[in-house]
Length: 320
Image 1 (cartoon, rainbow, N blue to C red):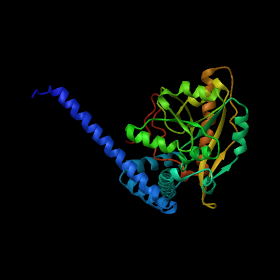
Image 2 (cartoon, rainbow, N blue to C red):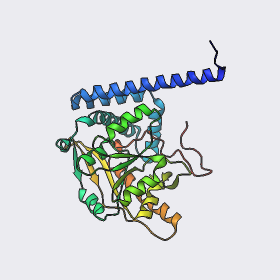
Image 3 (cartoon, rainbow, N blue to C red):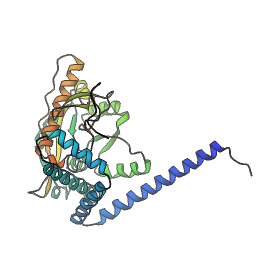
Image 4 (tube, rainbow, N blue to C red):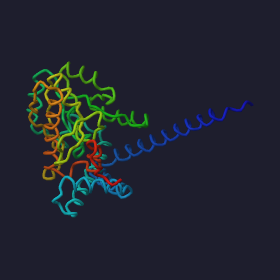
């Protein structure tokens, strides 16, 4: 029996191990979604919140990042206030996991029991212009629920997404996200697809509140600190004249429901200088995001190192 050359045998082994790992990860995610989705919603949300709190204890680095972010954003806060905000954020993450697992059970008939539309006239007015809508949003509360609910209310959209490394898990998550009629656009191949959707008068959702590579963003003020922010949203808006409508989901404790709140379209700055216009409009969009976070600071994703990319020559803000 012939013996395979060592490099080939090693390569085959690596590929085999990768496939096995992908299958195991897929099985774990599928089982988790199935089990949580079979629970009554209140129990699923309770279990999700407990699981999120447990997982965060296993990742002390993420907790440190959250505390550091809150210190940067709210230097006047006490440690007690920051810890309370983190507890609220973790609860929201756990609830989002439960809501995501229940997506197959949400329909046009029951979505109003879970999500209320607020300020929808702002979205409708922008859509009526016929030039497409750029849905400016962020990682607030159960953010995966926002576009899902919007589609069930009768207004499906396309959303930018970065593929999950495991293709099996990516396909599973995408299937859940699209059950209500939405469609994904791969973030790394988005320009042509986004322009096509907007030209047809469609809606594209863009999460615009995370750190961006220096080559992909511009520095704007975010909580008083320069933050590298995606310039893509401003470029699309300026090129197509599509309306940029802020829309954020937050949990209303009094009503025990989520609110999907649409704000008036952001008025664009047009000076004729591309670099200036991109920077000024990105600042306007970022200010909208910041104002939303300030209203519900315990519902934003503080785990993310928002100020990781620094201006050239500036020292890092995170210790690790």
